[in-house]
Length: 148
Image 1 (spheres, one colour):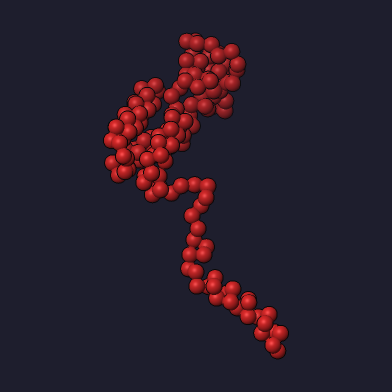
Image 2 (cartoon, rainbow, N blue to C red):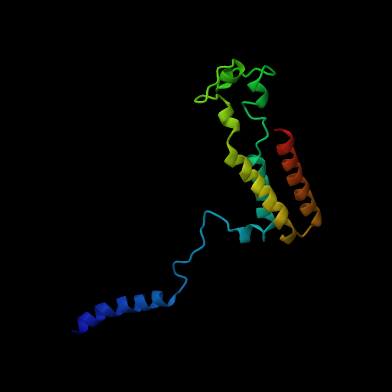
């Protein structure tokens, strides 16, 4: 009987310790930042802006928009010959698939709007950084709009 109690006591103690911790399973993810964390830290805001450059759909990629006409020549195919040669069909629109990724377009627009909405709340030590980042994001948005 006493040996059963000695075996059961540590298990009951462990259960009691973990049962009292309400946040035991409520851990913050280690591979992502919450929105609240991003807009509290100027370094994370800078990283957010840097990522906006990657989200820009500016048309100056490897297959440029000018390659869809006779304005320039793309030496690799990647579907440009369908549009230049007039051989596109509803099933095969060639390289225009690369430019019609609308979810990527709208992700950049959404994040630009989110930045403009939240930038006033960020605790920058230097107001010049806030002004510079606003200008960068504005120019990113302007470039995205005017290049299409």
